[in-house]
View 1 (cartoon, rainbow, N blue to C red):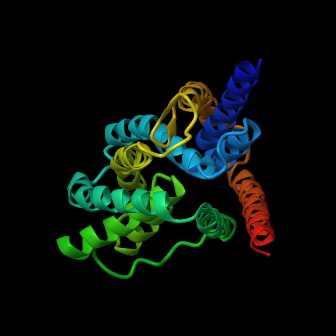
View 2: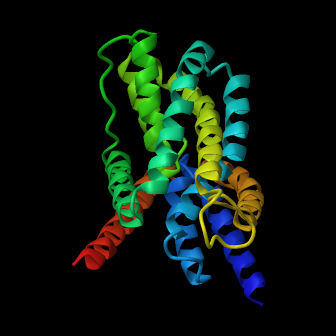
View 3: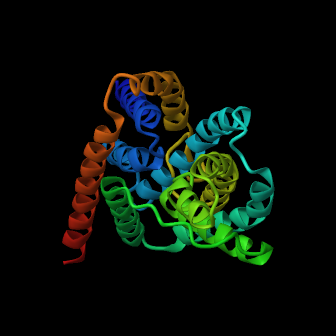
Length: 271
């Protein structure tokens, strides 16, 4: 009975995250991480690992969703592959650093960092902040440094990195269409490095639930991925009918409320 209930919850989370991803183009982590953390707490998983399991499992789902997005943008010639090639080594190093920090930073610190980051994403969605193009891409060393930072932060909050990559590339005079396509392609190495990092850093963690591979919880991964793959195309079709720009702002407000609630919970634990 408990197994069936948990499975239904994971399917519901996947349905919601997939539909919103298709409809609004939002990253899975913004929905999956708080939802999975709630589901794991409901299942009475070890409290010290709940948020790390949510981060690792969410990052693993991006492996599947980012590959689909990458292929779609590649077919439309929207990916600047030389940038992807230059960024990828830095991203892999950054994600490994981020997952190492996620293993050793206290859970409360991870929750606060995630909530603040999602709050910034929500503000960006509400006010549609877009930096004005002001320069060209830095040299290879500069790109590697930026990529490492993007990879590190992305693994700490389990997102595909588009929230940081797209503004940076547009600021460097890359067209918005190419910036989005290139960010989508970079989502795969971010997810790959992040997933491997969460598996490695959680491998010897004591008391993880059965079905875990490091900080990736396989039952949640399987059901959320299957459900999201079914509903993401439905969300994409719904953009032709529903006012997506208004829905993005509504979602951003909800995301902001979730961030505030998470910060309030963290403050309560601190006081």
